[in-house]
Length: 274
Image 1 (cartoon, rainbow, N blue to C red):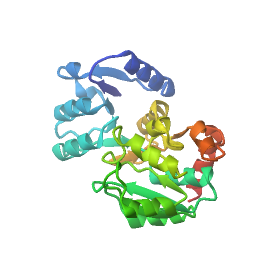
Image 2 (cartoon, rainbow, N blue to C red; image 1 turned 90 degrees about the vertical axis):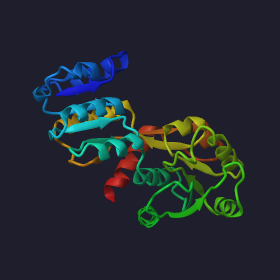
Image 3 (tube, rainbow, N blue to C red; image 1 turned 30 degrees about the horizontal axis):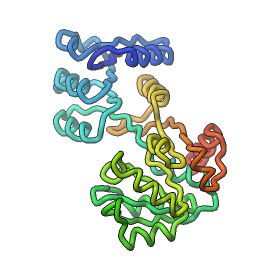
Image 4 (cartoon, rainbow, N blue to C red; image 1 turned 60 degrees about the horizontal axis):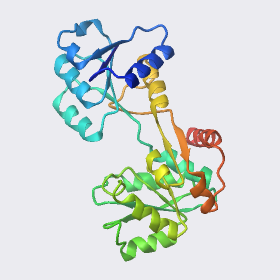
């Protein structure tokens, strides 16, 4: 079992140590991209790579050899580029919150909510009908609105905001980013509307809550993959997750928040049922 990294560091050493703890019967060897040039890759039957550069180096070295590879911490742009470049394929662990868990979180946090606003940029690609059907399973109706300028909301966006109970943030970097998030949160806060998601970082900024997968959840999923307990997919959604809550913002919006562990249990039960 090979763990390929760009360069050693204290964080990577800790990651390897925890992975070894989860997999006491496996032999995991940390290898750097520089060492890969002279390393006998045939001695490894499964690889985990950390970051896009390590994955690129490994795929170039493997060429057409079909060896299981799990890519961690791989941005979407890099995944698309490397998938097109190397036909032998690899599996990417997707840590971004999926919509089912976010919708289940809304249902757990604000059970009386029925109308949910979803603001997005023109670059956001998603199957609206599919997500609308998913929302119905939680008793929710999604109201979609393209937000062309987060600093100057148009009439339609303002109407949607006025009609909904809260807002679901989506994985859309063109809209939700460090430049725009303060303006979006201020607009929602003045309207008395909570933002759920799009990820843990936005909870620190002022969103009420979000599901997320961090290092601990990544380690658990990687261990399951090594043991062959996860399905073989090009993109593998992390089955493990946690929930981050901004209790101060929740209180200001009159949202009663259970502790994070209780919310995780509720979301897991809700998504498993569906």
